[in-house]
Structure formats: C-alpha cells, structure tokens
Image 1: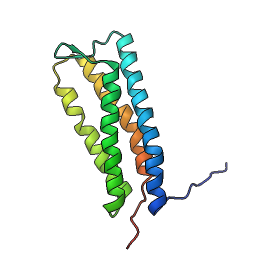
Image 2: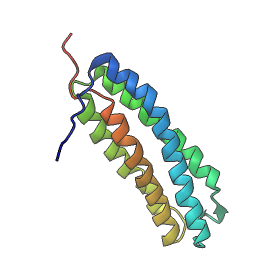
Image 3: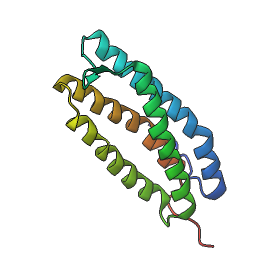
Image 4: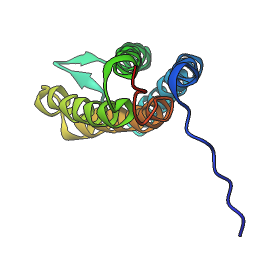
Length: 142
C-alpha cells in the first residue's frame, strides 16, 4: 500500500489556506446543519423552543455566524499563538461543548435538544479540521 504525505503549511501560506478554504467549510457546515434540521422536521421532530418554530434558515444563519467567529479566532491564533493548530483545536472543541448548554437548557422536548446538539457536532466536525489543518503547528520565531 502506498501512502502520500502532504507537507505541513507554515506561515503566510497557511493563513492564505485558512481564508481560502475556511469560507468553503462554513458553507458546507451550513448546508449540513440545514440537512440535519430538514431531516428532523421530516421525521416530525417539532424543532420548537418556547413554542416558537425554529426555521431551517435559522440553522443556516446561526451556523454561518458561529463558524465565522471560529474563522476569526483561527486567524487570530494563527497570528499570535505559539502553537496555533493545537491552541485552536482545544479552544474550538471547548467552545463546541459550551455551545451545547443552551440546547440542553432550552424549554423544548428531548428530541429537539438532540437535533440541536447534533447540528453543533456536525458543524464542528466539518469546520474544526479544515481550520486547524490550515494553521501551522508552530509559529515561526521572529
């Protein structure tokens, strides 16, 4: 079996990669969370909080917003953190877990809570690896 190795990107090339592929990952995550919501709705999951229906477009909007904040975080860490990739990955996973809290505490049924948390996990599973891979493991000494 032959394996191919992709060299790690460093410095400016890594940052350009983040800004090139980050928006694509965000669009993919938004589409995926919309699919999660549409599938849940087709399965008769109510997707309501406090009696208000959550539109599928709401999943898209919140995914784009949260992932865009993650993209900015990755960009900042890529510029300032001594170990951008690891720092971003730990921060992104911690923020993803923290994002479950409103879903768990929402005034809604269990099925809706499961869908909300699933949407967070799906979005994170798409964007975190793309953003992290776009960051250098270590920032070069200046």
